[in-house]
Amino acid sequence: MQNDKIKPILFSVIKHSSKEELKEQIPKDIVSGIVVAVVALPLSIALAIASGVGPEQGIYTAVIAGFLIAFLGGSRVQISGPTAAFATIVAGIVATDGLDGLVAATIIAGIFLIIGGLLRLGTLIRFVPFTITTGFTAGIAVTIVIGQIKDFLGLVYPTGTQTIETADKLQALAANIGTFNAEALIVGLICLAILIFWPMVTDRIPASIVSVVAGCVLVGGLGMNASTIGDLYTISGGLPQFHAPQLSFELFRDELANGMTIAILAAIESLLSCVVADSMISSHHRCNMELVAQGIGNIGSVLFGGIPATGAIARTAANAKSGGRTPISGMVHALVLLLVLVFLMPLAALIPMPCIAAILLQVAYNMSGWRNVVHLCKTASKGAVGALMATFFLTVAFDLVTAIAAGMIITVLLFMKMVSEETEVKGWRYYGDENSQITHLRELPKSVRVYEINGPMFFGMSDRIMDISVKSFTEYLIIRMRGVPSLDSTGMHALEGLCDYCDKKGVQLIFSHVNEQPWKTMERAGMIERVGEEHFRANIDDAIAHARDLIEQKKAEKPSEQVPA
Image (tube, rainbow, N blue to C red):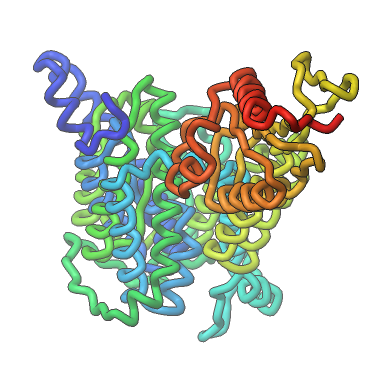
């Protein structure tokens, strides 16, 4: 299957599978979907709370976006829903611009994702450096940890306390540390211990479910003093309802940056998740179809009261490990959560907030990638480490828009510096008597000078063309370009300046081995016509022979003139 095909992979799976294969696989997908729904239930609630919205909105997201993306997506086993990557940016949008702002930003993101998929831009995700993704992922993890300290310690903030930015959260923690609740901390520690150690006992029952049950028993059964979801939120069950958004041009303009950030994060997270899934089931995803599905799923999610969604690596891995091999498992996961939403959602009010905090602390630890950070700091270049750290600290201190922009700018500048240092312009060294020169084991007439350019000719190195010079007796200048893979407009301008310099000196330019892309650029700029196509030669030996022929022609035309020794 072509990984750039714009066609839901579910349709291809059904078309290319026999009835016997489907009859054998569909029951496995149904079981896997139920298992994943059990895993996704507490996570969806916890991530919705971390995003500053109601618990049920996390389920709405997993149901609507999870079903649409599985049905239309480009991966066999991708599970989509609310993720920790969105928690901080969603919370910031909701706090400053309300739910209408979140709807506008998510619709913008959905449109960008759909357009990106239709334009087949899915493969461009590889151009986002690993240092950037590592930096902002670790930064998001730290902001989640900071945001969960309050509930983990059972702190109480005065009404109206603003905790949007990381600095606000730290200031509020310091100001209200005196409200520390020891019993809430005990509940949180027990739930966290279950999350860490339960998988060592068995992986048949998700640790998050065991942790939630234990937390409810500690608070509801044993009467330990800790706030529950029901103490802080009014929980509503029932089917997701369509909400006609109150949108305006001004709102879309204000949310454009947030929408682009959500789109970038959704693309990165979902396609990384697809790559992980491919390695687990020996398959290939359709990156562009996945982007289209992510766009449709996100728009559908916010129109039915949800929040932004993307591929969830942990839930996708659980699906693959549980035997899921077709998108049916992702659709079943969404339908099971819909049943929970309709019939069991009021029970979520009993879940203690320290338990939710413990779940999110484990999510933050798992997503932090601290081992990758340590490894990069030990092995990467100073510039790469600088880009990573800048992205990390800006994510924590400011926001993802600033962090990603700064990280990409630093990375691009470092890349240009590296490439420009690899590009060199050097003249051949000459040996011999006064009548002839021998260079690189080739004999040249004295009136011929050769310069070799190696590396891409772009705006970062165009000034090096100015290093080319000729002697008073030079009549022909050969530019060897076999090592030039590309030429941009600034490099072309530099070559035009060299052409002007040679015209003033009365020197004929000859080009050797111009590659395809530079040739097209020079042709569009009129350089081929200006220099003369006959002066563009296939290789250096041909160029030298051409220069000799021109010298002989000149001697034949003016036999009385001699080339100065």
